[in-house]
Length: 254
Image (cartoon, rainbow, N blue to C red; front, top):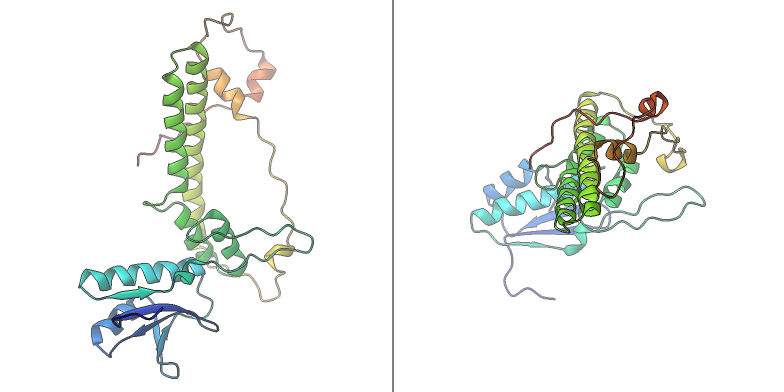
């Protein structure tokens, strides 16, 4: 496809340098904005490139933010849609291949971890999951709350019970979000870097998670007595010890 008008700035994909930018002239403003978003001019190619090893999501954000800044002052921008396609996800031998989706899918962000060496870069990827405008955890919490409200509309004992159960799950999701924020902040201040001889991430076996009691126990404990059930019976000491208390962390607001 041939453009009728040449854009002021064009972003594309280079086989060697990944995401690159080209400008129509040597206007200082174009150079200033691109450098602000970590693009540097390559005199040999006469293109602006990002630093070698820049994570894919960082490159996508740099293109989006620079494009918005150009468009805000009336400049025209063209971008190759292939910029949104994440790199393939490395897998260990015999493991099933996970297909990365364009944009900021969790699969794409997980794939980026295979390319990172610094703790701060991992924190940057995790920050995208907790981003104020694209908060995966907050979106899940809102969906569960809405599903709980839908159950309430049934006007039945079972509907109210399931609605309360869902709200307990939403509370746990909010608590999870708070814990992820803490982990992201810890990673951001860690100076650690994986050594050169570290094995590929795909070859490192995932350790089993700690066994935690099901959230169902907490949910059931929070439910009011249903007209369809006998009154709540006393809980044995053993059952009480196995039932975790609901997180005391306050619910986050969006």
